[in-house]
Amino acid sequence: MFSIVIPSWNNLPHLKLAVESLLRNSSAEHEIIVHLNEGSDGSLEWVKAQGIRYTHTDKNVGVCMSVNHLMAQTSHEWVLYMNDDMVAAPGWDTAFVHALKTCDTDLALFFGTLIQPVTGGHPDIIKCNFGETPATFDEAAFLRDYLQAARGDKEGMAMQPTLVHKKWWAILGGYSLEFSPGMSSDDDLLMKFWVAGCRNFRMVGASRFYHFGMASTGRITHNQGGHIFTMKWGITQREFYRNYISSLRNKDGGNTPENPHNAVRPTWLGKLRRVRYALKRNYPLDGIEAWDPAPGQGYWGKG
Image (tube, rainbow, N blue to C red; front, side):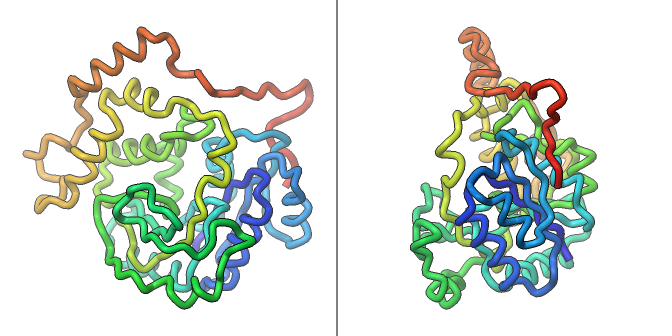
């Protein structure tokens, strides 16, 4: 069984659909834990009524802190992190189990295959419109056609939902809080896994999820994730995907001593960007809203 962690920020219709899909379309009774940011839309009352394990903060603390805290609450070794605006298709978990059996290490990241109304230009997202909101979601069509587009497993790719061993999440520090509320935190996490020696970044073709998209990210002030990533690692995110992650599809699997991408090496573009961002004097906190709790009030509520 897996532990499943879901951060949510006042998205009750999406959250209901996500949890219900997991309960209906899973082959086992997985552990589900939700973190509620604010929860002022009735989602706090709903999780209580459903008996779902949860944590809660009175304000939105962002995805980085939410997921890190949820990970610490989990019981199983393998943890799936998914967004609240995703719907799990039948077979999502058995496909992950099969992928785990074919991998000889727990230093690995596995990703689901997304189906979306729009792809955003990502070639590995399946474009199929089963509805753009929970109210218009066509569940019958989704259950009938979610496997219509053929997709096999693919190494060297990454997207959520993400299946990770919680040992490595703890060792590598999970989501880095300098990326709060969360833009580019995923790419930073991938880089930390790369530096630790991970060469298993696999998109699992048969593990499918419908994704409405932008349910929360469209409502927040974005941090300058691309700037922070470059300042931290010395390369741009595009360079990381083009020169590092994509090298896993080479014959050597990105893991031979001769491969120059085994370690992170600052590039000329990265160095120039660092100078540019430093001169702009807006690194790294522009757009990040800190929450300073009142005296006697902690971040984490009951749950």
